[in-house]
Amino acid sequence: MDIVIPLFRLFEPLDAVGPYELLANVPGARVRFVAPEPGRIADVLGSMRVDVPTRYTEVESCDVLLVPGGAGARLMLNDTEFIDWVRRIHETTRFTTSVCTGSLILGAAGLLKGLTATTHWLAKDDLETFGATYTAERVVRHDKIITSAGISSGIDMALGLCTLLSDELTARAVQLLTEYAPQPPYDSGSLATATPEVVARARELVSGG
Image (cartoon, rainbow, N blue to C red; front, side):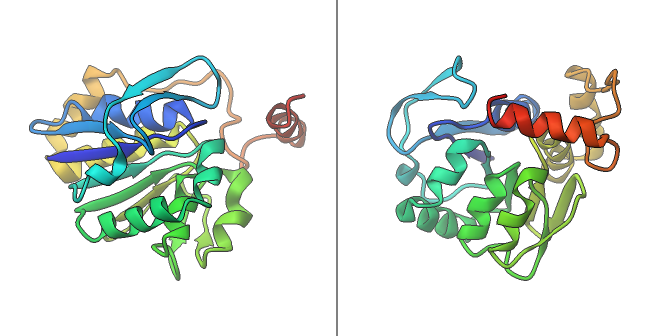
């Protein structure tokens, strides 16, 4: 079972590493990272470097494609070779998935036209330019296309994938192995629950404030 996660400069680390942690525990699964060029890929936060030996064009098919987001995802929207590869690989997959602004890449590949989909709340307007309808749901599935919202939601999506690729018992066991039982100290994890002050501060953080 071949699970492929493309990385690119300025990728969001939890988008990729969170799902990787869960999916790598699925029996028979091989999770591998690919990149525009072999070498060391830096994340958007600046301190993580991932050595990726495989160029994405070396992959001609896979069972699962998982596209992370981050500032680099927006840069990849201008890479027609990469977008064409995503579109082509999608034809071979059992599941084509995204986390956060990775959905913009699926949109650019024409995979979300006419569908409801989710992404990070800051990118909802961008998502709709690709013919999708944004929803604030945490995970959205249409047949083999699965989009998940911002960053941490990729863990929820990956846990659901564990069931689809194996069975519920295995998925529950993976949840236990990773002790995924979130109990956040605050209830500000979505626009539905965050106060206007929290939303404003989040926007300031994104802009470097």
